[in-house]
Length: 144
Image (cartoon, rainbow, N blue to C red):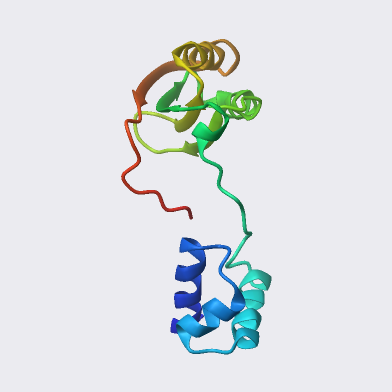
């Protein structure tokens, strides 16, 4: 991977819908050369996909929260991951080091849904402790 590839990646991260013509013009390549570089980045596994990111508020899920989770026992990982996979409100989950085992991002319709999710974690996910923070606004978000 060279500097042109890194610049193409940077532009794709900012705008995954950029045309090959736009990418090529931005980095001094033809559209065909830019397309070939993107295809090579995909084949090599550097680019793992292109997705549409939908605002959680678009379907009424305006309450976003970060939930730190500590499991009751070390063997609960699979149980917890299966429990959160069934919840549409869960948008991200990261397995962590430190005091908590996971940080889960949820997008809820209201506080009642958030309460149901927390109860689900404890009832079906083997969770011993949670700490929840409501997101007021996103200051910066980069995927990857």
